[in-house]
Image 1 (cartoon, rainbow, N blue to C red):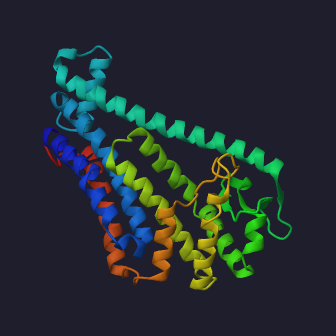
Image 2: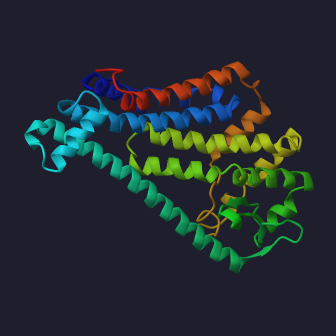
Image 3: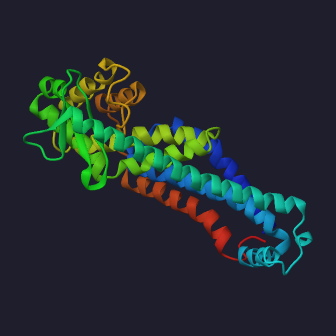
Length: 316
């Protein structure tokens, strides 16, 4: 497992710095948002698995030639049937670091989930007081505010789309339809789960370029994917105007406004600019073969550390 640990360490370093930096600077993800999303998820998962796996493999080197044998030897030490001296100080430290990092990631994931759920509950309680159901649209609430605002609030069977009076007055029926399709796509495709996972990843490792760049890229990609669904029902000019009008809404709201405390995705100026630029100066979609290559590379990237950890004898 000695060489496995070094290979995993090298892979972790590559996925922590050069890979996310290069991907964040690439132009093709907007041409293939689904494939890019899969690749970002693979980088995050493979990077975390490689970091933990490198320390775990190195720590178990004195106890066996593969993960199963090493874990069996560790079990013998924990249960008192083998001496801790067999492990050595450096390898014990590596195992402790792997355990602490694993616990930190799991705890941060749970803590982020708890925090987001608490915010959603508070936000939903406020909506019950400050909004009313839309007359002709199920699962849609209307808040009394002149600023054009639209967002979705996930909650399983209680998921809702929230619109403002100002938005409904300002937008034409087709523009409003585009906005509704966009927000409903976020709910239907469970984009809030992706935001939760990458928010937890960034909270756990805020100093890691992967976590910061991945969260930003995923936030942009889910907007692009929702735009693509809306484009199936409305023309491009309608969607462009709707995006521009909705983007002006949060800037008109006071800092203590309801919006922002519970909305899953409020566009930043950079995201809005990227969305509009993509629609106004469109590039051809990435070819099917190229997209398949990206998805295949993502699968191989995740399979590499998994195989090194689970399949005996790949590397000594």
